[in-house]
Image (tube, rainbow, N blue to C red; front, top):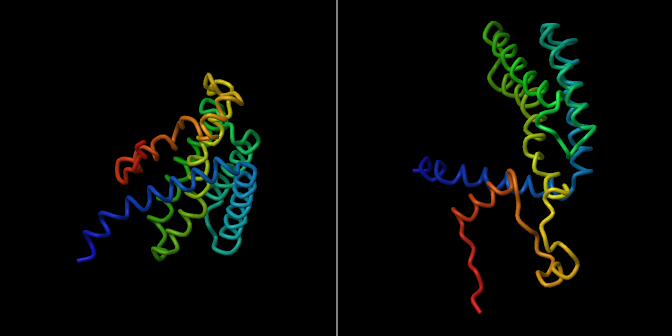
Length: 187
């Protein structure tokens, strides 16, 4: 009885959560940068702990630590992440390499599913996902996105409403309006 209900609402709940996260990241970029820095440091500590106490392979841990170093490089220009920068391209390639190495290792060594999921979540998914959601954070402040009429007078007449969105926020806004259309006031 609950399966159809969950199947219908889970994607909606996930989209709403992602939209809210993207809004928060866009609004508080300095705090987001600090949080991502702490996540990278925590992931690094987990990787070192897995090497010291669990005997994970040196190569897998080394690639993970190098990936975290590349993530620190991405933080230097946060929230302005250039998709063509060597750091971004290298981080994308390293995500694929890390996944391959983790799949190989966990195919050979038995660990309970919850521990495998914890490794993937903490060491492989959280940081790239954070960067992905924050890709649109710097788009609305670039000089190329300034619309004509973005002056004090236009701002006064529009009551300070935000302009057009771009990137991932535009997609989430479209999905929100498609699923839960808002009512417009008619005068």
